[in-house]
Length: 213
Image 1: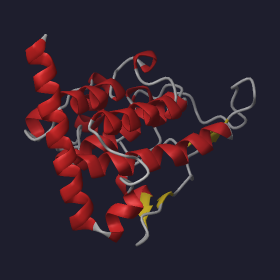
Image 2: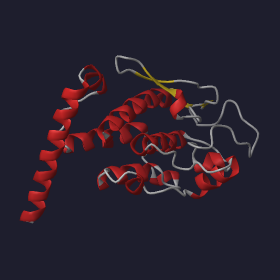
Image 3: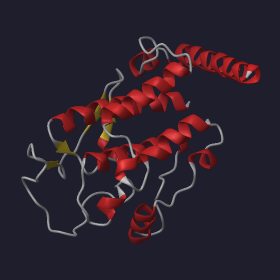
Image 4: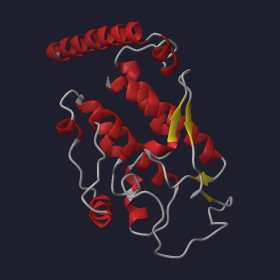
């Protein structure tokens, strides 16, 4: 169910939001670095490639110019080109993870690391709705915005990205106090059924509103 993926990404963004508030850019966000426990807590791990910024955003520790560090499957295009990485680079990686969660496919993975880097640099990926026909257009647009080649066309911050996802769930008729990752894990079948019913009612209401217009 895509809505569960949304809940996971919201929790990832909360962790990244905290790191960014401390002027830390992760630079190696990928599924392997996202852990979850039985209570529904999400943990972002492995900050080994993180860059720490001064208040003026200059790096306290520089890597060699033009070097490429990180996992190519989920890195940002600017990182794939060996350019400067920023908070917006992390948001691209989160969007790549989001794509993977809702489609089961790594968006840019090819037969070789070089081919993968080329795909990332040129933003060549199968549209999410083609990879999973069950995805609605709104969710696909949210993912695609996060995967923009131009960093300035992505979400401006992790908090903005998180708010967009929370609003998406609210528009589907979800009560965020009840529909949470922790509650879903505690009562998977019950929450899933209620979520599907709410989404169905929301879709019917939206179609009726469009019909009246």
